[in-house]
Length: 459
Image (cartoon, rainbow, N blue to C red; front, side):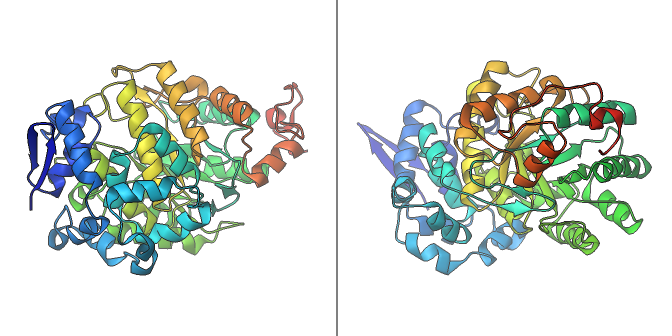
């Protein structure tokens, strides 16, 4: 089925729904690399106009990746909630945009709607929205999850404390963790990307974090971002696992390139739940995603990278995660070329994830060979914070010395908290006051040489 749109004296033709979605996307280098991008600005506008007139139901009835050959498509279709979809079932994509931006569409309305929205619907409407539309609509979506503290409450923004080290040195990691805690970071998770894939090394890192959290009774969770199969095996060996991590994508073939499928993710979740380590909730999964992953694995089926990113969120929500984040600029300029593309992608990802009912955060980042700089990261951080982002990264100095990329720092979190009055997770906020790290208003107190965290004592 093709689509036509007349703009001025030119008739533009789009051969199928995949083509229409791709041509309607804002320009990004990954779609151009795949030969999917609009040929010019005029074609992009024509695609947006045609997409705005498309009935939402067409996105449900016409899977863009075949149902028979893709388990992600089957998950999306088979789990769709027709009752939740009913209030918007008669709308076009353009009408859906108007609905999302209407003052009568509240947080409660959007929460009830989420199970009825497919990833393709979220992606489609995002393509015809301005940045301010993405920010406003996302700000009305609230998703709360919990494990040892409560993530996503109104007026809060959490931070993943990311103490990576190029050799997994325990002393270096501990120093970074303590530094982050003293800046009030770590309520989302203390999460290490291990330099080694050794089970023994991963187990040692898990025990290091568990001992630290236990010694100081920190109301947060740890995660070593190993492959799900490694984490399952470590659980079987008795390792102290809080969260199960996995990178995921929007097609079965792309997930296969990560060495995972839906059954394996379910096994990982069940293994973590069996440990019963949460104190205020049982959301035990942590997922990371990023535009371009399916294309880089040659597993994109001719679908644009942003639509496939939204489909990854369709995978994530099936497993009730504590945290999901897009590592928005990490995959490189081949997929998001510069600061402008990274900023737009970050806003799209956050909007789509929140609309689908996920606790969406963002690693606001760029690689060192991208046409982006710290100003771009500051801009995206500010925009996402106003949009209600669930969590961001806290990296010492904003420079990850193990992964070799630029992200947000402990200081950046202080900036945006002060700017917008954002609190930490309430249980973590109370702990910071008890430990004399922050005062009653959440501002940092002066560090002292005898501080309990620095001396290693609890009291």
